[in-house]
Amino acid sequence: MNWRLLMATWLMVFMQGVAHAAVEEAVVQLQTANGVLEGTLLVPEAKRGMPVVLLVAGSGPTDRNGNQPGLHHNALLQLSGALAQYGIASLRYDKRGVGRSMSAAPREEDLRFEQYAADVRDWVKWLAWDKRFGKVTVIGHSEGALLGMLAARQAKVANFVSIAGPGRPADQLLQMQLATQPAEIQSMALPVIERLKRGKTVEPVNPALQALFRPSVQPYLISWFKYDPAKEIAKLKMPVLVVQGTADIQVEEEDAWLLGAANQRATVVSIDGMNHIFKKSVPDRAQNWNTYTQPELPVMPELIAILAKFIRQGGKLD
Image (cartoon, rainbow, N blue to C red; front, side, top):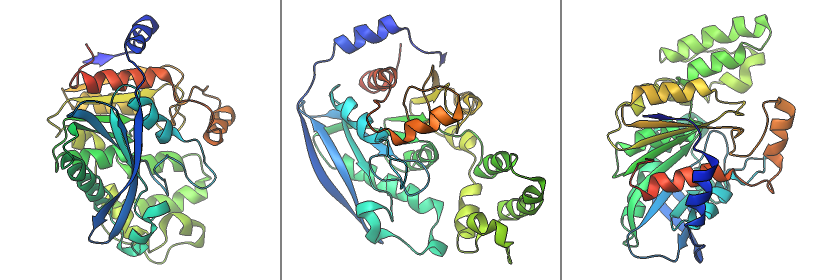
């Protein structure tokens, strides 16, 4: 079932029906075989069995609030707080090797995509042990959507949400990004991508490509390239929500429709004017990127209302 942006009148009615809740915040830790991960648990004052979401951040050195060095926007922090006002608990965490989870950082050559997915799975299991919570919803942002898909099949997840999740394998996305580079760079990079896609490492690597394809990162890229988000989302048996903003300059609207078409249980929602970090913006790249360093900008209320309704109604929007 595919939806466009819900009408503003419906949004206002739904939001008016929700009372603001007192919220408890706690720092929590997850013991893993390779170090300790740390996160923040937000719990509204509600009855036993309240819904809870696990927020899975996107690519790069992203912390529990959605931030990276030089990119401070607090998107996940704001999302967590807004959901609490709907009586929905949430857990967000520093990725392995980031922030207060730094002690769990593996050597770069030992890192695999599956390790990040296992962290998501183990956090879901951790939440399942807490008797305050009922159904667990995984919300994956950007690359975190694919991680959430993999984890949702390994743990007890009631609902799955992709926000700005790519609908194509990472090697294809990388090729699309390289299409804007000079022909010389493309001619050097594309054969490397093709070989990595086949599971083969490449040495030596041209110095111009070291940042992307240095030998120590190649095993991780190989482990990432083998997953097709459309194929992975097709395997999910729980309700699925795919959300995409029309002002996203990192992931295209077509990706959302690719994901939605792959799973009959999926509902696709397009939010007009929302960019990659859930903020109101415009397609102009310069203005759009400016929002990535403005933490005072709120996440769009349309997104919060849609997520809250999907979670509170057991994976339904109608």
